[in-house]
Image (cartoon, rainbow, N blue to C red; front, side):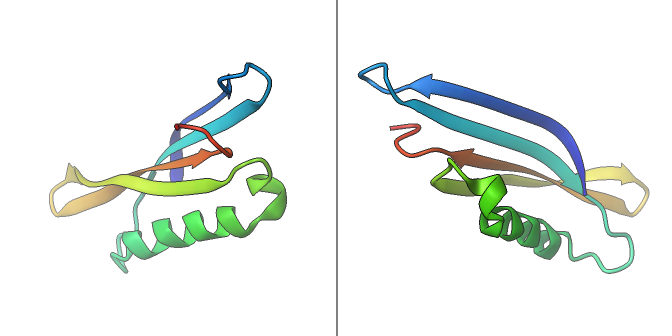
Length: 91
């Protein structure tokens, strides 16, 4: 797995008082032998959610935008986006 992008932002709620964090991780995964990229991407998402220090301040995580990319003859890899949001973010 490698990271292609990382975006962190905070937004005030409607009262302007509470800061709502949002983190988007964009990455890719390539496993030439086993071809189980989806399992590895899902495991990464689960590990980050279980890591209390990393997940502190976030309430939800959503794994999405998984796609297959060509990297040459008979070679593909998967890309993904993982979005973590704090309480009330995105509402």
